[in-house]
Length: 80
Image (cartoon, rainbow, N blue to C red; front, side):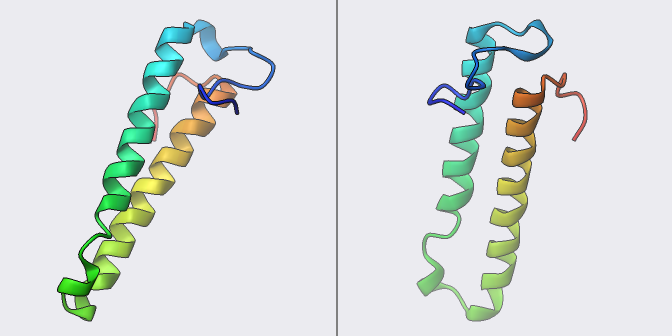
């Protein structure tokens, strides 16, 4: 995947415009930044709460990877 999130060969799935793909990639990158930001301040909370934070980040990252897979495979993105 290139820096714009497009497949290396430049093909776009399901007729989506380059602007649409770029927008979706930027949204996914922002979602990843937000979820990883949820790990900040772990030193300030009880260890018993760390697992919930890690689980939330794992779920958000899994979702972002699924969206990236949809972009690359040309899926409509209606599922997930």
